[in-house]
Amino acid sequence: MLGSIEAGGTKFVCAISDFNLNIIDHTTIDTDEPNSTLKKVFDFFSNHTIKSLGLGCFGPIDINIQSPNYGCITSTPKLAWRNFNILKALSDNISVPIALNTDVNVAAYAEYHKGAAINTNNCIYLTIGTGIGGGIIINKKIIDSRHHPELGHIFIQKREDDHYIGNCPYHKHCLEGLAAGPAIEKRWNMKPIAIPDTHNAWELEAYYLAQAIVNYTLTLSPDIIILGGGIMHKSFLLPMIKSQVLSILNGYFPIDNIEQYIVLPKLGDKAGIIGGLLLAKELLQA
Image 1 (cartoon, one colour):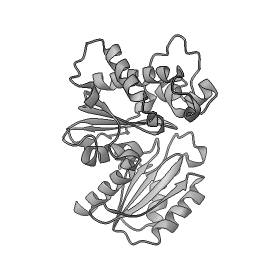
Image 2 (tube, one colour):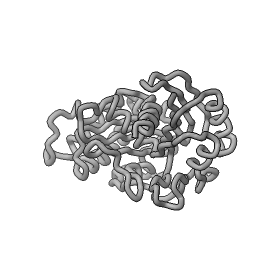
Image 3 (tube, one colour):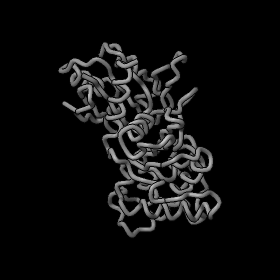
Image 4 (cartoon, helix red, strand yellow):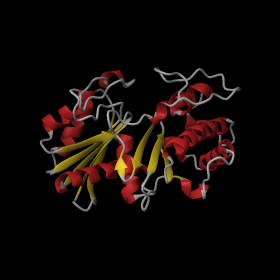
């Protein structure tokens, strides 16, 4: 059997599958401090015999196998997890080969192989929720060299009527600081789920996400961009983003079919787990 962990800043999802990726068992664990969170993870896997494990982890995380800090979560705003070596903690308790990458890279990998990006060579997966992160597949391979991509921390232009300072503790008004869930809540004093569909909060959100998508389009030229995460559960937001992308591009860069270029995940909230299982399977086939 194969194991997968989607280690998120809000929750950990753990799953077991057979070699054909049919999920046999799974559990969801709230993300608390490392010891209590991982104890529940270990308890889950102690009931199963697995051959390998795929881990997609929130970050920033050191995924450079040559680095002395390989496997360490680094400058996360979740202070209890800062500089914590999650890979070592798992390896010390689950004695199987472990494939490590970021949660968003792993989700991108799943959508590339099993979801919305099948039959493409290049894709971007962006998740918009508690934070904003992105995974990139170029020429059929995950992009991660000295450091993984940080698509949520690019800088975008604030709209003139937006006086919110920004929520990112490092950059204030980067994309994550202006458009992630906590930024929406603090700007409007309402949780995103409570904001009416007709509220002008969503036009502003679409504008910021569209700016980012235009930047990714002009620099990476992917075949498809997939937008996931809790904020994208607002179904009316996707058409607004597409319209803003075309407006910002202003005809400069050809997009043949905007409906097929910017899409929602086909795997939904299961992308991270399925991606982890794919990485675990590849470990055994190497």
